[in-house]
Image 1 (cartoon, protein in one colour):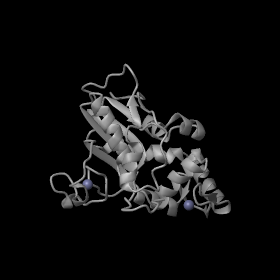
Image 2 (tube, protein in one colour; image 1 turned 180 degrees about the horizontal axis):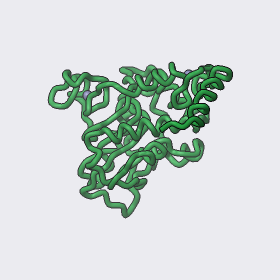
Image 3 (spheres, protein in one colour; image 1 turned 135 degrees about the vertical axis):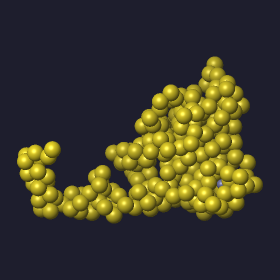
Image 4 (cartoon, helix red, strand yellow; image 1 turned 120 degrees about the vertical axis):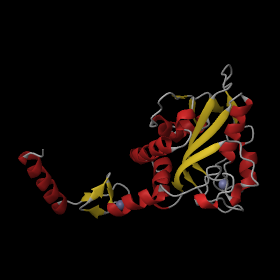
Length: 254
Ligand SMILES: [Zn+2]
Ligand SMILES: [Zn+2]
């Protein structure tokens, strides 16, 4: 039962918001009503950007009625090394703004939105109960040192892991150029041989779920999956926050 004290508190809070509207953590706009620290516009856009039907093989936007044998028209001729992918949304709008601000503008306080979204993708994905290890896509140590954290590990830690454990024995052994301004073919060659499994670690017969914030051509996830399967993994799934549209040439995607 709501007490008189709580009711008075709610009224005071409402009056307070009218007199002192809160600042949206993303756009900086003032608003009397907020959800999760964002103004209603940003929040609703984030919810929209973080949803939608997609192809479970490549992660691109696709209606479930447009799939043929579990794949969309766009990926039927592609070689994809991971077994299934689960994602939140596409890399655009507020979701893109949050990822960019978090990774490149020191807005580490925005991590909570990405972890919330990642945890909800994990909770709803079809392979949730079929994972032994959750493996964040590794950064090269120089990039991790520069950024101070690996965003994929931050996202992975928020998953409700039940029986799965986080494993960081997949490492990036070669420093690679950023992928975003490379064509699909160059992305593939850029990451070829960039990953390895730590010596002495055995992934034999394990079911693994890779975690990353964004995927575009899938080149990084493919190379990680290939490396893990070479190390004996039985299945490799992937969870990402956003899938970016794949450029056919060298145009930038962000
Ligand atoms: Zn806003
Ligand atoms: Zn597809």
